[in-house]
Image 1 (cartoon, helix red, strand yellow):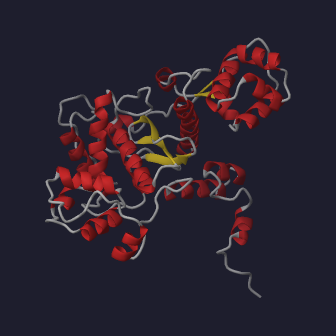
Image 2 (spheres, rainbow, N blue to C red):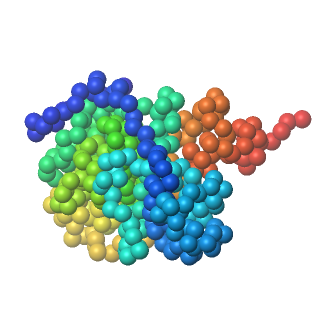
Length: 390
């Protein structure tokens, strides 16, 4: 095991890793009756932006029948429920399983007057809940375990503490001041399992137990912003802040700046930038490429470090030709859909090979990365597979 992070210095109570390591992981609650099922169907429908008439027509139901289903006055058959899930583009589990109780209490419900961004957040929440269910399955099979970070939910009290925590995390990862690799893999080493979401959000995370959580990152974000968002969610995960309606593990709104400070230090340590002396524009372009950070994050860090940027022309964002000229390639794009860490895919492949899950379920767990067919068939069909001999 890697060495644990040091305990909090602010005097707040911290749970012992020996006690948290054996805590039973909470699973989702199931709907208890047709009333709860109807309410869940209504919430998912509103989250997708469909009205009752539109959903009823696509499900070949009368609108009054759907209205009675949503109010709990009418039972819904298995076939009808499958049709509803298909039209809403969700799984049956999304309809019959509810988020964790604390999450339900924190998330605002959607209604007919909800704004588009509220509906997008709801959709992201569905993906996040699905990720947690998947993680529970792999965890219960002993394929993935919580990471003993040595941090017990003390939060972050200031930007200085945020940067210090980021440096401790880098020490835990044993990377020093070097550039980080793929952020999904970095997060996985800390017990946060990422994936992307088609919902138009930045990021959303959920850590029900120290050292074990999930996060979804908006796949439509610019590559540099995706990395920054992943670092942001790592900050919430490691700090162990209390869940709130925003879907993060931060408390007040002003805490955003603290997590931003954590993310910036994690991605690009200020000490690295401080070594620059009156840097040229090309020196900054090389640093942005090597650390795969956005130009805005790099220049903001340099300004905060008091670096003289007069020669750098920082107000002009670099383009692809600049990167080709300076380092010979564009920065490698990170967290491309589905954005899963390698350890997750390997765990799912192991579960399939050991027949703990079906090939179809392994494909679902990896969002289509693994084939839904038998492993031998999938290998033979892969374009990089060796041709048959003889």
